[in-house]
Image (cartoon, rainbow, N blue to C red; front, side):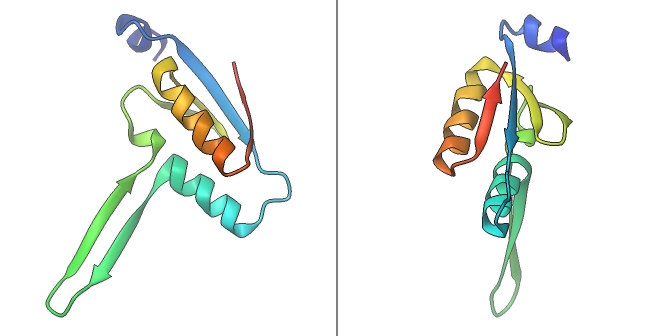
Length: 93
């Protein structure tokens, strides 16, 4: 993956986060942010489904392990901002 990020002229950044004594809502917010979610709504005649993609579905992002992503520098600032907005401890390298 390192080669792909360098070919496109983007420096890879590693972002990790930690949920210390997480509430269920905090964990759910982080999971939706990172992994996305599927939302279904029933109407009278059909079921409408929306796939809301998370960060791991974006081009150039690599899931390294539990609570760790490697992503292009251009996307790392938005992820860090989102994690900060929901009060999650995080670190970048």
